Each structure stands twice: as structure tokens, then as C-alpha cells.
Image 1 (cartoon, one colour):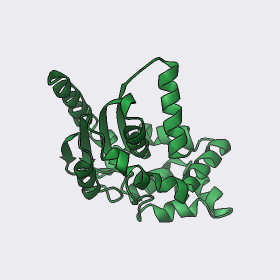
Image 2 (spheres, rainbow, N blue to C red):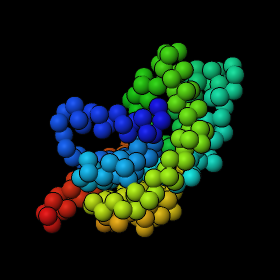
Image 3 (cartoon, one colour):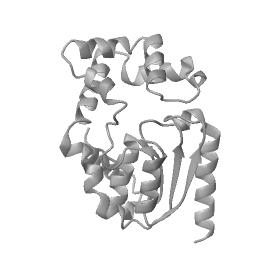
Length: 220
């Protein structure tokens, strides 16, 4: 579950599929994995797109630490994860965590999807608990600092798409990445948008990604 293990798995998948290069889009924890790929496997990354990603030393964020630490308390952690497998409780938690700016985005379909993938049975809840525990491992959450020398050498076209109303990984972190990545072409800020920007602004997000890919290939 570590960042390096996930990056290794992606490289292994590319090898298995005989894909030399790919475009990488990363959000949140996936954004940290994407940075690791760009920093240490730059030859495999053609275009890079980052969105409200874990970076530097700002994760788990101060806002999410109480939720994350609760899951690690004996008995209470199991109870919290079980409660989050109830739709009403998970919707309330996502709202309290400012996952979205417009709470109307937290539809039954969206909440059911998160529950099914992560909380729908005891094994999934235990796996989620182990994943959250990894967030507090210095050998893992300091990787996004350790990779900076490589990231500062990454000159492939890069786009940053950032939700402005994300209390966890706000625009200041996107601006910092924009300054640190030589290939960064621009940063697109989405107003009135929370952390789950691809859920809250799906059409706008997809349009920005496609426009960026078209523009950068036309300039080749």
C-alpha cells in the first residue's frame, strides 16, 4: 500500500502491456503516486496532470487527521468504519470533511460507490484501516518530500487543475507544485469547488484535460 509499491505496480503493469509511455492523471493519494512516477520513472510519463494532490509534507492534512486517527483506535476505529458503511453517516462525514463545496453532489450513487469499494464488508473495512495507518508512516508520507529533486527535473508538459475550496490541499499547494515542476504549463483554478473536483466539475475537468493534451501534441 506504500507509494513506492503502488508506483512499482504501475510500472509493472505498463511493462506487461508493452506500453512505453502513458499520460498520467493523479488526484489526492493518486497524485502523490503520479509525482513519484514523474520523479523516478520520467521516461514512462508522457504528459502529467495533477489535481489537489498530496504533496510535500502536508498529508494527512490537519483537517483529516482527527478522522484518520479515529480509525486507528482499538474498537472505536472498527466502529467508526462500520458506521461509515451506513449511507447517511458516510454522507455526513464527507460533508463535514468538505469533500465537496456543494453538498448536493453527494448523491446516493456517489456515496454508494465509495461504500461498495471501501466499506461494504469487514475485509474491505480492515483494508481501508490498514491503508489509513500507512498515512502516518514517516517512511511513506515523507516520500513526497524525498522525490522533489527528481520532480524538479521533470520537464514533460504538465497541467495542474486545482479546486479552490479544498481545505486539505488548497491552491497554495498547487501553486507550489507549479513553481517546482519545470514542465508545468499552467494551473487552472476551479472556484466554488471542493476536494473531489472530478465529481463536482466532471465536464469541466474532462474538458481541461482533453484541451491540454490536444494543445501539447499540436506543439510537438
